[in-house]
Length: 171
Image (cartoon, rainbow, N blue to C red; front, top):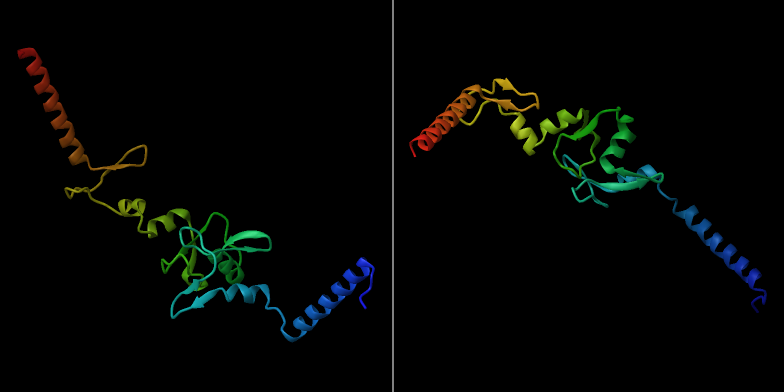
């Protein structure tokens, strides 16, 4: 017959489930945190693709020791050590979900941007204007200019202005 005291019954249940957990752990030990982390990736011939939670840009994300991490940053930290201050990780394979440490390189933010296929990188790699002249003038704001095309635009604007003045005087 079960014990009538509620606290005693609760203690019996707690001990029962504790024994069950202990038996389960003895026969089926938990994997380490690191083993569990690496199990979250599918290893293909080249990349190790993160299969768990991802950001809206496709990078793996997780919580490790109560801190939010991007999976590729944690993979690099676990295998190669901490990421040096001021550097960013560049995916050499261009796959955001890849956590293969061999595909990650610590580089400056500028280098990482210039290696990409974004608007900034595409235009920064250009050395000549659309008409084929080299960009030979660097403005204070960092923009580049072709002096030949700039001179031609100035000449056209001057001619247009003079034509307007002549029309007003004649009219």
